[in-house]
Image (cartoon, rainbow, N blue to C red):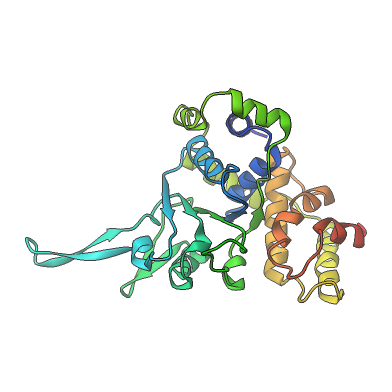
Length: 296
């Protein structure tokens, strides 16, 4: 692990107490060029995690508060006619940023949610017939409240599949909660954070992650996991090939964070819950999948 990457993790853990795994999962998503969905009840630090990551990684940050009256143009931007120039001028929306926080994404209508699909998959948006590239790196952190809460619209499977991982923050343990209650306000801490790397260094890390070695035996293990989900009666449908690619990408990033240049089965097992939890309808505990498939 590079010194800058160590500094990123240390600063994030100092700002978000008691959540080392969630921080690491989020960082793995960024390095793997994926997107992160955080699902949990309000007030457990979902938005704080996004702010901390953006400041610590030195990324341009935008936030969209998703509401029921949000329109796609509010996300993508709009062309406005300028009388002085006698022509239309495009005003970019908040999606034109390196890190986008889609806060409470499931409170918007499906039409507004769909504005993110092309951006998340292809890192570009098509507006008024013109394709516009998004900044690099580009990363979406979306938060959503549990689906049983009032005023939520469930994300369709096609959009859920765009997220590399889905995680939950959970309640803090007693020690971390005591630190939150007796310590400095989190907003003051976030305001004082300094970048520990920049966008160019992050892009280099993303390229390095792609080169982390995956052996044939490891590929056999991933295929066995995928095959089990397709053959087991426990799941309504099995994992797709795209899910397998997502699992490998996340495992490569996890290995890189650990300072290794090759993926081991433990890397796959570490990222498996976040990668598959939103892709397996009616799934049990992802740990059951790990136990059901032996390492070749």
